[in-house]
Structure formats: C-alpha cells, structure tokens
Image (cartoon, rainbow, N blue to C red; front, side):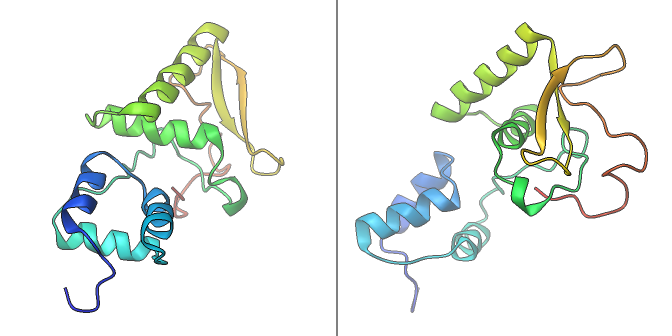
Length: 152
C-alpha cells in the first residue's frame, strides 16, 4: 500500500479479530512505531479488508440522541457491548468481564439505565419500574428520541 502507515498488515488484522478499538490501535501505533494515525485510517483499513464493523446499532438499547459530552460514559459503553452481545458477537477479555459485571449490577440492584442529557453525568442508574421492559428506561415519547440522528 503506497503511502500507507500500516507497518504490519497481519498484526492489524489480528487486532481487528481480537476486537481492538481504533483508540487502542492509535495508541499502540504511537507507542510501538512512533506514528500518528486517525480513527478514519483504521475504519478505511477495516472496509478495504471486508471486516465487519465493530459497532452494532441498536436503537432499542440506545434510543437517545446522546450529547457529545456523554458519549464515552461507562453506562453507554456497556449498552454498546450489550448491543454487540445481542447481535451474536462474542465479547472478549476485559469487555466480557465489564459487561458481565454491569449486567449483574443491574440485576442485583433492580436498576435500569436512564439518560438525562441535562445532567452532568447524563446516564444514571435508577430503580426499575414495572413498565421498564429492558435494561434501559425508555424515553417518554418526544423526549430525547424521535427522528433525530442517534449518536453512538
């Protein structure tokens, strides 16, 4: 690949197979090769090699338009992992352990995740109510959901 920053294609293919994220690859290339890369470079590599997208879109688990300041909060990361698990993807390593711990906490405490964008944290663990049908508190009609693009 002329002009490519990819040093070892097989290494990168292994990383994708192991479920590495773009930020993990960026950091590893910075550490190991002293090269600066970007998320789009890793996404383009994935597409060129016909690899499945890491993210799974599940609007039943993440029905909100999530504000930028909340996009990397732990509960949202766990909802993304749950979407992957429901899509039949095997979670590995730390992701699997964190996901299991998250689900266990919700079950043991009788909680669900609610998103309140006007708050500092955004995502909150709240007591499950009889109308809660999943691991989230679905937004009321017209509140933080709808036809807007849903951030992931």
